[in-house]
Image (cartoon, helix red, strand yellow):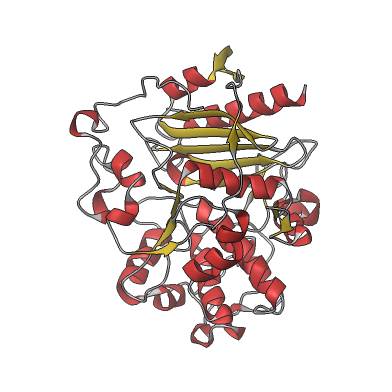
Amino acid sequence: MVGAATASPDEDLLGKQQGYPRAPRLSSIHDPAYIVGSFSGMDRITSHCELAPAEQPSSLRASATQAAVRYRFGGREHTLADYMEHQRATAVLIVKDGEIIAERYGYGRTAAMRMLSNSMAKTLVALAVGQALEDGSIKSLQDTADQYVPGLTGTLYGGTRLVDLLRMASGAKYVEDYTDTDDRKRFLVTAATRGVLAAAAQVKERSDPPGSRFNYAGAQTEVLGLVLRAATHRSLCSFIDETIWKPMGAQSKATFLVRASDDSEIAQGGFNATARDYARLGWMLANDGMAQDRQVISRDYLLDMTDPARQPEDFRPGRMDYHGRTYYGYGFQTWLLPGKTRQFALLGVYGQAIYVDPQLKLVMVHLAVGKDASGDASGAHLGAERDALWRGLVAGMAR
């Protein structure tokens, strides 16, 4: 059951009267007038490859009644309807014990629309690395990237172990702050015009020993994408489709955006899927890699990805420094949340998230068009209120 529509913030600014149009070109997708239509239509703006759904999709039944979701934020108690009125959420979908207990859409978005992942795609790449380990295409996470991609020989990233790339711990001097002058922008421009190998070769200086410090940089995910393509002799689309997307029981087609320069998928953030299939992905993770009565992802590898106790101490929640805060930890391309039980999240800029609590068998999918990349810099407090919504949900379900 999809909840009744509520008014979303800034509807007129975001193009309601024009039917939420898509941007005419990639450079305009974040413009307020185009962001809603673009984030739910990226594969109609630029080149992409496709992942086919499963012949027998996994069941994701709707609960007979919507759950009464409550949380505290700003000194007051709120409901999910309040949240949809406060924040630029395009979809919020909550699964408990295999049932959809809440499902809301904003800005005229629907369950059939494929929504942009942004950096949630990084976790999908890490899962693919696990599948390549499982089938022997990748021999060890202690291997360096250039053992699989000879074109990286002699480069900083080429000489970095896969485990350090997975933890965002290459040691490279690299700034990713979503400004027009950061290293991320430079990397993406070069990758778009000359390919990922050329972009990776630009990163030449280490600021820290490999494995010692977390430094978030999508370039590391792109290098993992190169490793996967070389090791499996397949595109990311093909490999993820056959080893993850179909086995988990996806109901709808998904897509990966592709660069014209070298035909590589945008591994760090170019995935697109429906909210319900993102929920299926989260549900598989909540079940430690099980889906449709089979072990799709190795449970041991998934714990390596998501268990704080399996990370070096400086990568655990409460210890890891990220922009001056120690709230999050980081596993393999996955954010780790504080708490007495294991909780983790796939996060992407502008508000994308999948929260997972395996003990409670609880998943929350959150898709959005935030005012800025971080969600909080504009003063809208999207990230903070979204986290409060999740904590309120966990507290309510744990009673």
